[in-house]
Length: 160
Image: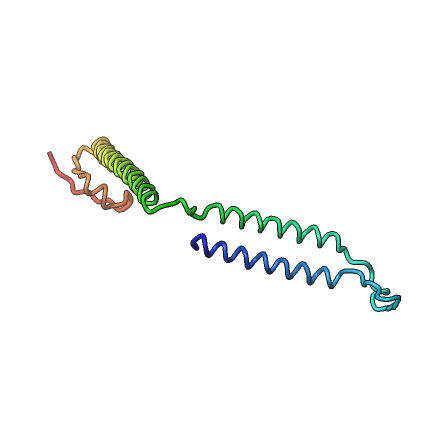
């Protein structure tokens, strides 16, 4: 994403383009004016173009771009913004960042604990299903459940 000054430059360039396009379209579509009682038949055969629609379209585009420029200008730092105020603002943002990082670490830790419980439960379920299907006791470890998918899990029998 571009910085605010670049965004402001782009918006001003866009506004200039819109002004040029609006003037060009209005010149092209506008009715001819008479000069000193000289009548010309240049555009008499052509139907009237919807200049009012063009005027409204360009007015809306120009107004929206002008509002965008105002928003960008308002978001620029003011002259009253000193280095101390900026440092305080950065310090506050850094504190918020550390709090968010701590919260994220806590969520990740709880997720890891939950994952271990689920994997342990899956190992217990696999062990109990194997016990009920045959009289042979199979040994399923949690590491085998973690590293293998359930279709390719091969178990070593242990006889009692």
